[in-house]
Amino acid sequence: MKPDATSRGQAILAELTADGGAALTESLDAIAPDFSRHVVDFAFGEICARPGLDLRTRELLTVAALTALGTAAPQLEFHIRAAERSGCTRREIVEAIVQMAVYAGFPAALNGLAAARLAFAPAKETAVATARRTLWPTD
Image 1 (tube, helix red, strand yellow):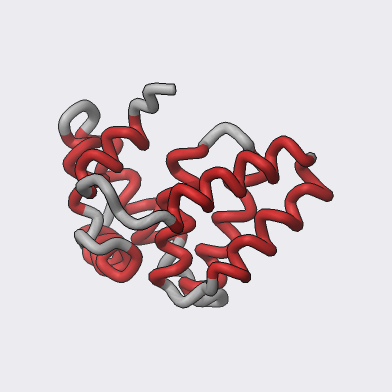
Image 2 (cartoon, rainbow, N blue to C red):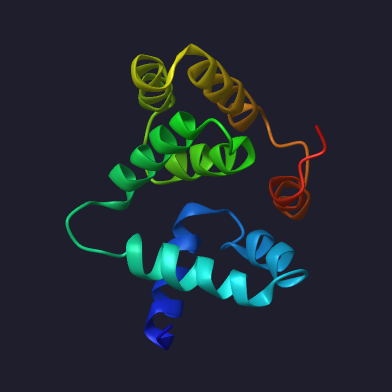
């Protein structure tokens, strides 16, 4: 990827996370450094940086998509926090998740609401621990 994609990706992660994305990239660098660069450069530096949608809208769409997938609870929790940091209210986030019950089923929406409950809870672990749990869930 282009160096400017890296800079854009890092800037977007800085907006979305309290640690500038350090926990995410550190946890990935430990096992798959190339994949870490792809996440920063492509997902955040190329896709999230595209014109046409603001970051707030992109994060709300990401919450909806991850809810519908139903297989990415740790990533959903990450993006729920990112949606809050980008300006979404908790009510908007919950409504986006509830809306997915119509299209993805009640189990997906229930799991999404469980992820929201965790994301909205006061922080009890470090950012690195959160990223590790995101990559390697224990339950």
